[in-house]
Image (cartoon, rainbow, N blue to C red; front, top):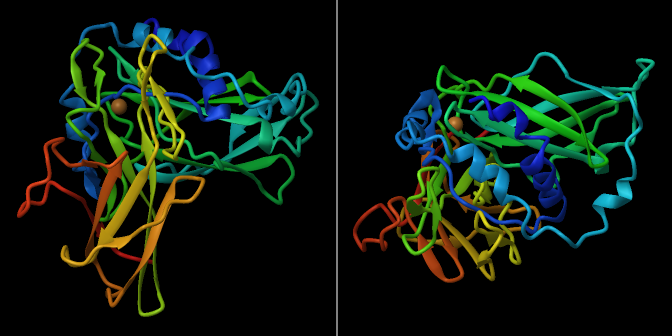
Amino acid sequence: MSIYPLLPWTRAGLSALACLATVACGGDDEGAAGAAAGGGAGAGGHHASGGSAGTGSGGAAGAAGGASGASGASGAAGAPPSGLSVSLVEPVTATVGKSTLGLRIVDGSGAPVAGLASGIALLPAMDMGMHAHGAAVPSDAVHETTTAGTYDTTLFFPMASSGMGSWTLGVAVGGAAAAELGVTVAEAAGTDTTHVPLSNASDTVKSPMGLDKPRNWFLFRDVARSEGGGVTFGVFLATVQADAMLWPPVTVGLTLVDASGAEQLVVSSVEVSGSADGVTWAPMPCDATARCQAHFAGVSGGTSELRVKLSINGAPYTTDAAAPEPAGSNGYATFVVTPE
Ligand SMILES: [Cu+2]
């Protein structure tokens, strides 16, 4: 608890931001964040691994150094203007799952500062007392709006603020820490599924207690639209790196490192497929921002269940980390979907 306030912008934070900029970072796993259907069914699972020893934060701090390097792009943003002030645009409506938060950035004289989008890095962090963890940040998370000095940011939160933990959003501009903002993340409304973790027993990370446990790969609901006589459904795919603070988007080439910075896993293939009936499966191709989607013809515009399978490097990932059961339901994520 006491070490936490130092985390985001000291060792772990700054190198983590470097990782975000280059995408080449790796992962440990944190909190078995449950499959959060709205209404809060998901929060409990995450805490099941809580109550752990106080080593989590320290481990996080040590981790991040690893596989950054590369990418001159982040440096191109240059030095941040000095005296920047960053605040959240009200009202703040963050919920579990996909959320958009507005940032307002002004200079020392209070004038809006435009043109910063490519240099803004986000580091969401949840302080859970004995340990801390992050949330998923897409590579295209930040978009400048038409209102000068304001930026929309898209984040995917795995759990809600509660008595068990609170969220902050670290913001860096041009590689320098600019703000650490408190954010209240509410449970999602309704009954739609916000995200589902899948895992494979052979892909493990150290828990804060030092135990090997399956790494979570999260499918976050991204889009669900009624159109063309069916439903277009898409997920955003992220995983968790060894320090638990970084939840990188999953694309081919992603390198995951352990807490010492040693390479653990390189993503060489990502296969996502979906099914409305559990019988017929169709590819859900993933793009460069780790969005994977497909159109499901004939699915009604009402609430339905869509199933999504994930394979990484040819290995199936399941709801219980075990091999898929031929007649069971562990081989895919199930999303309750009410399309827009
Ligand atoms: Cu948490």
